[in-house]
Image (cartoon, rainbow, N blue to C red; front, side, top):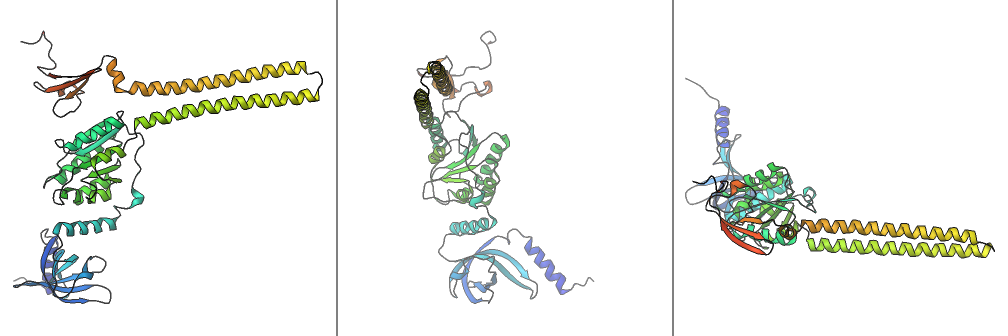
Length: 402
């Protein structure tokens, strides 16, 4: 017959409870009684209902909300159940407690927010600046909603030079959080995405809850590319917003913030061109003025200065030619930059005889032959407008059709 010590049994029970996932993450409601506070700031109390009770301990360094508790309060507590070996007693190790009436979603939000804040996930010092001229912009959102369409419209209007990559994800429901995590992982695996937008339209706290999940917060924190959140409306606030490198009030605002307006860029170039012309002209005038002063000084000091005057005239002419050449060179460079920007204008490409082909329904650009599935509706844009088309049997020439 096996014999066991009390310590062995208590240790076995404690290990069993500590490794039980159900008992490690519990929300419990009941009435607070036998509340006491130790000199170190720890709380000890009992939570009970009409037919049972459980002892609770909330350590000062681990618990939040205990200052609002009083005996007789109806409360909600979160924690894990384990055994206190010294007395062999079952008790709840509480990390969050609030008077009843606070929503469970809000309580979980506050609990996770405090936990991640302590770990440094919200630290402003770790937030990265956004690239000024992104070449590739990744978007994590639903492929079927209006959010992606709105983002594309903003990017096309402000900065059509960037490539937009959609990494589709569910944005509502129990499977949304893992889907968002996978979408972020896929974009980071490409290694050419300069910035990531995580976006969703507005909704209730329940609808936006996937963006309050811990796995989503940690995926955003671990992203190699900077992450901009555009979740819900301005009044919505999620854990994902707090972890992101930059939070914006709406998806469209996220698209605005990650790009520079090309019209503004053209204004800057025009300003630089004008400044260069002005500065060069002033340099010429100043040079001529200095030469004139020098000439007059020489004339006053030397009665016969014809030979020197001729040399000075040659010097003035040479200086003017060089300054004029510098001005022309600067103007040519600025003109080259303008022509380069002009060549990037999509309408210029269309005027050369090219066409832009998009999926008629999803508005995605078709860049490869295997995307043109039979029966797919297309929208083809040329220089003076657009027309619709359907794919009959892409990749097969007329001579090969049966």
